[in-house]
Length: 441
Ligand code: SAM
Ligand code: SF4
Image (cartoon, helix red, strand yellow):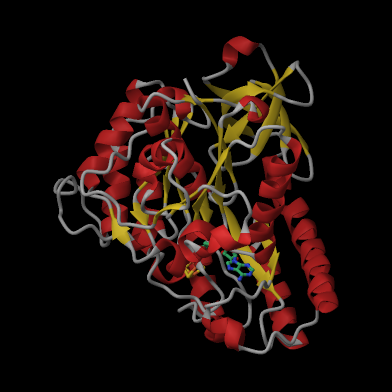
């Protein structure tokens, strides 16, 4: 049996794609191995959101080629594969096949062609009508947490972003299919599901199938209610697009205990001028109103965000506005990125006039503001009881169990292995920089 080693870079959509690819490889007679050195085939799932992520691919393939005495079959899938297509064969010596973002259902065919002696195998075709979105129990990244794609692609075309080009237009999966997927995961013992997509709250299926019994002003809030009704213990969703984040989502969270108290709402900048240049579709005031509504919720909803510093034309005053926004919102955590010009995006035509040094300084300064606000913000958990899904033994201390709270914090606590897979009440005793520490109640 030929062995395949699958390596994944990038977002949770990529992780989810890899889980499904692993499922089809195993069903197609391949062994999916965690051991790279013994693999006959190495498949790399790539990310192109920032230049650094893209460069990782070139370094990785070089290493595989140079360190193995017999070169394995090497394939590339994901966003870089979709964007670069056949040109990758010129850029990467020894590459055997390229699979686009919608062709992941046909990875086994591509590998078989290479094994039969074909060179430069490329599939950038469309997704099959009957594509199977389910994942085999053995191929999930976690036994207890399941990723459930609900929408793929993106129609927003934020000026800096490559995703609409690498992932195509938004396509929403039918709610009935999503609910069936969730019920199957629940049957397999999964405790927490993440509804995933570039913009989950832009969910707009072509039929009402599966939503008929559920109310809400938008299809997404109706889907949240439909998924809540499956009885699965915990539901998280990620990422939400601010312009499409309506009050009915907060209402659904307020009404259903199994909708977790965590919302990831990327603000990107605190300056209206920059937000307009980014074509984000929200102003900072409209964003603040959504944050206010979330803070008014009867649940203690944890808020997280993404921010880009050093967008073309970002002045000191714009950057100051971003710092103020971070202070106002009080995010539980924030992913801060230095702007990375992506060829083919509208922003690539703008003058990248914030120097690398200035981008670095703004990154560090904003990180300090975030850390300070975060430290204060997280104090609210001290002495409080939070429910944690015990996921595994901590890699730092074999006596500790690690997992996530409903508010999506990493929580460590002392406990026996027998707790793994269960929802445990933990009292928080210590706030660390990026995690909480507690004891079983
Ligand atoms: N759809 C989500 C949204 O609208 O916020 C985000 C998806 S994107 C893959 C993840 C994050 O990467 C973005 O929120 C943004 O902060 C960051 N990002 C995207 N393009 C970038 C670029 N060219 N340079 C730096 N960061 C970028
Ligand atoms: Fe990229 Fe904007 Fe789409 Fe998010 S909404 S994936 S940032 S284009």
